[in-house]
Image (tube, rainbow, N blue to C red; front, side, top):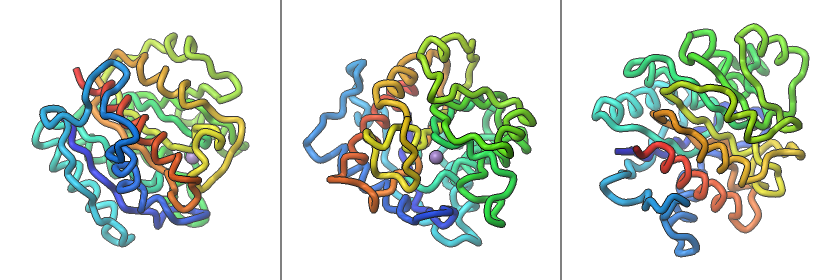
Length: 264
Ligand SMILES: [Mn+2]
């Protein structure tokens, strides 16, 4: 059983606010009548026996936001459920993984992004949306970190990649066979930053970085995951930057395939 949670947090964004409004827009796309609820493997992911929408977590105050996320995720995992969270900027992945650490051995994280998000400290905010994977790796909350779609590595982040032993399939080198050759063992957690996609596919993000993945590339990876998937997030969708809500539909499509990868 999957619990769906909306995380309305974007105060750790460095450039633009907006991802706090993402959860309801993704639900709108999913339920608009424009698409059905079937993943490509035929599963109805919104069947009440497979997925329960637990609504949004209000976590928009910096002093309490992360603790509210940890408590909310912990509550769902304590029921024996898996969690997919929607929205928020990417800083939410750190408290999510802290909650997972109470219930699971450190997972392999499959992380789609234009950015490594490994800054030791970005603009004096160690919890910036540019830093979650530095915190996760420092605390041993992941067994392996596999990043896909990256195309913004600078010297500092290259140092961090080497320091933490991060495995990177850069956008310029992406091929599905490189992912299949990684010999991943479960459990797996999936973190999907919408800016991994080329802005042509997903314009509704705060940081446009051309030269990205196609929607099909991401779906191909999700459909290649054969290990147990224990959770996932879809972050950094910014409705304020979107064009006719098209990125909401892309996020809803990825939600369907992520859920399908999670259902046994
Ligand atoms: Mn990003």
